[in-house]
Length: 493
Figure (cartoon, rainbow, N blue to C red):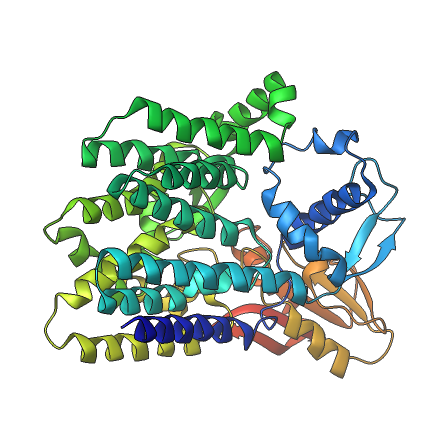
């Protein structure tokens, strides 16, 4: 039995790793990756030099630094040089680190973090449910399109789902068996989770909800978990405690003031994301069969453990009450772990469960093959898939700037040396793969270019009018996610 469990856990872990590695860099660089790495690199350099009095440790409120510490520990491997002329991301430096375009080694951290999360879900489901549920849950989690997409990027969310899953596992162990070890682990993991993103404070809803489910209100034990969490948080990031007023002011402005709300596109309308935004995002980006299994899992008669998993699934949607709603499921990504467990439990309750698990696996792999490598642009059958979303402009696509690697490579191979390339791109122009033999500048309608690169996000979200190119340019390359153009290359007629 133990050998079977170990063999399946290893196989699923390797499957998760391979699924993420085989096209790791194909989607290209995305927004925020450089910022996270540059900040991590700066932290690592200060640590290496022993410069703990530098103001940079204390004047960097967003986000808490654990992600930066972890990614920063490998950022130097992807760094190629120091640009002294660049606007510094490090306010007390005279430049900025320049990284390789693909960020391969830093992205391996993401691959490993999410694959460990898959492994944790396997062991949790095995311990508290069944072997079949463990296998099914882990396979579902490994193949969820949006999670797969983010696991190929340098992103806080990969560590959010890892530490949220580990913390939930520790809480469950504590409620089932409140030993000193489980109390200490719960406290440490809570502190580490809060050290990644402020929004993870919602994990306390899971802790207090567990107290209600098990009817155990041991003030001393819960207080000890909280104390250990605070001490862990303080040791790794003393800034909030030394600048309390500034820290509270920053987070109040960020989380509660309406002025910071970022417009999105919802069912074809540009608007500030409404209260239902994350619920809609969950409904339209979860593969339909998984969605149906999840709802069935929510309706199954519950014991205490299943009530806990259900609460774990619901807690991330608490971010709907804050105004800073955006980016579909990215900021609530931690709900995928309990979703996978609910789907696994539901699948086990069905007749011919092994056959159905095989069907589900083929279905998920088919989805991934069609949308590859742009997994974060997946939409399910409820809205007609990505092609309907694209043709009717129902939601944003390519909002992180993905899809600009291959257009850049096309220009490198096909554009004559010294060609002038106009960049009608949003997010920023630095996401396009650039050849040293070509000249690039921000697109100006009054100028004539040899080539122009346009991405879809700039059209739907920023309002760029692609029709102004029709008279003088022809489309010579399209970067597609299934049938949707994420980016186009135009050549002058």
